[in-house]
Length: 95
Figure 1: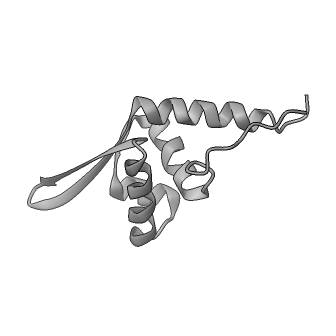
Figure 2 (figure 1 turned 90 degrees about the horizontal axis):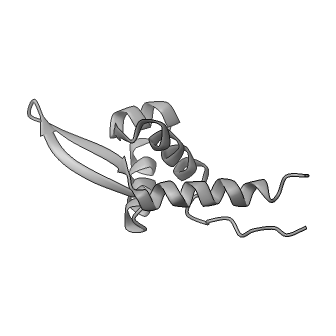
């Protein structure tokens, strides 16, 4: 059996959850992601920064009605990393 290496960035439960959410919606507000993942704001911020550093997501900080708003968008690099991760994971499943 040939096991493919799993992307360590996506192998974190929270980062994988963020990317999985963004695959479906393309972009989402920080608060939406926090609610959906049940993560603390601090932990989510750290994980979002890691995804941003490797270029899997783009983070847009703006203001909406005088309140700061953070939008996370998946990049094409993030989409292909997710697809590769899923393919690699399938190599672990019995045929």
